Image (cartoon, rainbow, N blue to C red; front, side, top):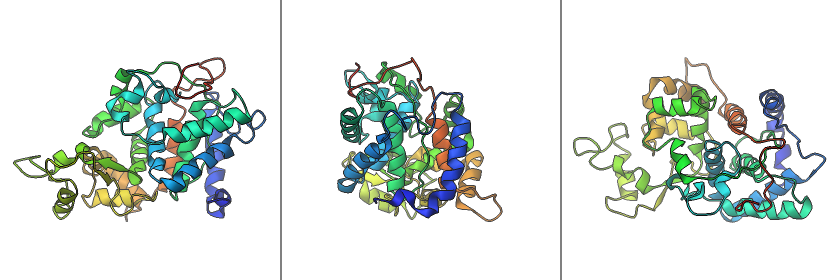
Length: 327
């Protein structure tokens, strides 16, 4: 992948994203190139750490992407999800299955050797999420940096995270609370185009969901395949791709699966069954009669918005020397 970040196919998107990032984050105090003088190799060090782990375990890519999302929705994008200890965010049910913490630790160790006390864990996580998307053949975008790290991490605060059974109305309310609209919701949930889920989070849809049968929103032809992968009373920890047939590639196949009744999580499939979100799924798929949207570009746009939720800058927060521990 070395040198891929200069691939011409991203030049136009990068130009758009640079202009957009500057406009979106001016008020928050973050900016693209924040470390240009204080730690010029910061982004390349993070990228190298992600690439190194990705080569041996591609599953760290969706893990890092989810981790950044879960971090931003709780206490803002301040790396509070990385803090170890009893009853911290990391211990909460929505975060127990996340992967990729070791990537952040690798990057932080290298950054502390190169630029002690300069680069925040919150920025490392934001950069690693971007690099994870690109490594799975998604878009590369300019990430505004300059976040500082938080000191508060409570498992009880994670109840704000959208759940896998959540209604679209509830999801929209949670996103709107952070200035994210319905298009942002659909784009960001589209991040499920990479990664997988444990059977325990969706197998209830396969057995006795309604009138003794499976969830009727699942394509009937797809049910036997899922039941074979996740048998009743089977291993609930077994993991299944969220985007059947394309779980390691960042693309629009996830939305095509929703259209075809092949969504894995109940909350994902509802993006198609609810008219207010179906419109955006159709636009990302470029369906005839819709106004097409470029999923990669809109995903990057929504990520920039999300990554500036509740950021701490200036004299707020701190720069943790060890991401899992408060200074």
